[in-house]
Amino acid sequence: MPKRRTYLFIVGGVMSGVGKGVASASLGALLQCRGQRVTAVKIDPYINVDAGTMNPVEHGEVFVTYDGDETDQDIGNYERFLDVDIGKVNYMTTGRVYLSVIERERALGYGGKTVEVVPHVPLEVIGRIREAAERADADVTIVEIGGTVGEYQNVLFLEAARMLRQQQPADVLIGLVSYLPIPSAIGEMKSKPTQFAVRAINAVGLQPDFIIGRSSKPIDQPRKEKLAAHCGVLPEDVISAPDAASIYDVPLWFEQEGLGDRVIKKLRLKAKPLHKEKWEGLVLKRKKAVQPVKIGIVGKYVSTGDFVLSDAYLSVLEAVKHAAWAIERDPQITWINAEELEKPGVRLTAVLGEVEGILVPGGFGTRGVEGKMKAIRYAREKKIPYLGLCYGLQLATVEFARNVLGLRDAHTTEIDPGTKHPVIHLMNEQEERMKNAAYGGTMRLGSYPCLLAKGSKARALYGADEIRERHRHRYECNPAYRAALEERGLIASGLSPDGTLVEVIELADHPFFLAAQFHPEYLSRPFRPHPLFLGFLKAAATNR
Ligand code: GLN
Image 1 (cartoon, helix red, strand yellow):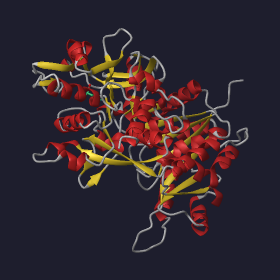
Image 2 (cartoon, helix red, strand yellow; image 1 turned 120 degrees about the vertical axis):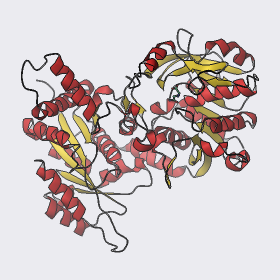
Image 3 (cartoon, protein in one colour; image 1 turned 180 degrees about the vertical axis):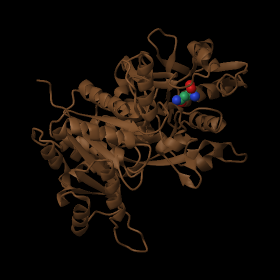
Image 4 (cartoon, rainbow, N blue to C red; image 1 turned 30 degrees about the vertical axis):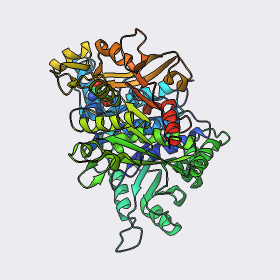
């Protein structure tokens, strides 16, 4: 008999941005603690086929999977919480779903039938969800539907949930993550918006099985009962989810609220003994980390209007936290807008004087590039630990070529296509794509092997001579300059197996100056900090 697959849809009510992703991931973690095999699917309702073409300030980080998909940051949350690799099949957008339906129709895949929005689009969605479940051999597949109920955009995905529930009534649950405001003038937690959200779900033929109520404070018993009465759930199925000090506290909060057992019971899953020790250990570790370590992250996607956002660098931030907690330090991050460093008369010591480590994450385009290079030069000359990620490697190379090799007009051709010294240039196969404006999904994406040089810092940190890391870039180090750079001390310590592509660079004569062409932040886990981040944080913590 084929294995039973169950599905848990998570939908949002009232407003977005209240942590549906973390709630989904935390619930998955609790089920794992009970011996269930879990995977998670993210559905984004926009037309973009993937997240790769979207501005990170608007959409947040682009998370790259091992198999080269450019996805939503929630996939990163799933990987970090569930500690499993999540691939392309687990991510879909409206655009991606429609594209495959239309392509199948063009290939006569519907055998002459009229292809209709309903049922063919929801059926495509269900097919993808089932495939994700099969590939992961999952007992439970968590499916997070982006946006909020009542929006026009996600109706077809809710219809998919309804149809799947109709096909397998005993195997599908619906969880609503909703927001309960406490308006300051009223001073009371209000449940009405959530009641309306439930009405909106009811209108598409669904009834939530439980409600996770996000708020700044815990939900008290009277309000649990009120919500239960108005929303058609039991009081014990109203889960209180107040703002947490750390996202990694959420699984144990849910556990305390009894959510794990409720879901097991509702899905009639075979309960195995509960093992939540690893989450308890993580919470303890974070609480023990009180001594600060100060890290400056120099980027350009850090603010919009009057608000500072860190979502564009979510995995980087998480990777710093994981590594800091591992050495019992409390990471204190200063977000530095690279453009600020470019302003005339800016004193670098005033901005960077306090930080113990400088990190330049990935990026694209001209804005802030000179500021980033100023920060890199400062780190190199003042011997402050430096970690460069992708663009952070390319710009470290340009900075070194300019200021150490004396190639004044060295640049990346991404910014200056006519530079006399293209130390960073476009990979061959990329030239053609750029000419044809084929931008979507055409970067060097996903997991690639890399060989680490004997005696290098990179090899010592990884404790391995061959590694695999995830990439997302078009440009590369130009081999024509490698010998000159190495002669002056900028070593290519990681190379592609054929020796052509530079994947890691480092300075020997520096406490810690290392940069990667790949994105190590995607592989960092709370239970397994990434070796490069660990090395960087250790260096920062002991630097002064
Ligand atoms: N813009 C650079 C490139 O395309 C770096 C990309 C990145 O930092 N992810 O190669």
